[in-house]
Length: 388
Ligand SMILES: Cc1ncc(COP(=O)(O)O)c(C=O)c1O
Image (cartoon, rainbow, N blue to C red; front, side):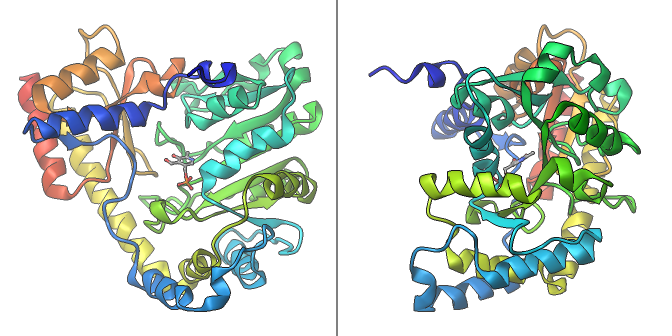
């Protein structure tokens, strides 16, 4: 059976392949430690689970939800954005629930791109920034995130032809996979660039709640003028340990949201209302303590990993946010994939090769901090033994 040409154009989803490989090894009795996928190992906070349990027993939540979302969910998002980011949103026109950020990001491509259009995609970046445009029949244009610029793209280098054909720009800070935070002034330059070139900015805000060392991650919408040129996708997956729940929101430019809504009414039937009610519980101040304790957990793991990597001679930057450590591949390996393959075969530790996030990720590998401390320690010991 032949898949569509659009599907054939994109490589198989990297993590799906990796999952298969790890399953094979485990079946063969190998004790594999995965530092691959960024999926929080801690359970969803009890407050949220309890809200879901209550919600799911209410028959009113069992029916088709509206794609606009429940009024109380949108009000909770409005209150959260006001409290957390000092951003004012109109719940009727500037907030729409999404079935996870992945859905929203993918569907933006179907909503906005025609075959001749481009989407500017951070490289390295979350794979949907490139897979999405291809599957929509358009094309991504990569913007390299340069380490010496703090992992932001050089907007000046985007040429006139690309500027005129680009309709979307995907950005993400705090950043997966590099762990970078947005440098001062960058979002302001993005707003100017988007305005000058009539491009819709899609800021993927998946990690703003996981920050360390006193750093507070902003919303893109805090930037003056951002709402005129952009939207933000805020996911509850990582900050609230809710990856399986599929709960996110798209906020910002009302015209863009109207287009996204139009697309969604043709594609899906909205976010399960019980999940929206659980989302309300997540966004209330009562969960602040839980979120703070997750930050502390990841900070401890980050230090543990960075110290261990330094000891084996890896020159690692200590990230101030996210659940990832992004480190250069040690000398002597031909590619990030070759290094990660070697580590998997010799130490039974899964690392993610930087190249799966785009060509600018070559020469790097990613460690996810979503593994219990004892297993993480065991993994870094194995890496140490391999290096000595
Ligand atoms: C940058 C980024 N965006 C979006 C997502 C997906 O979020 P969700 O679970 O809300 O679909 C991820 C998950 O790893 C991510 O790293």
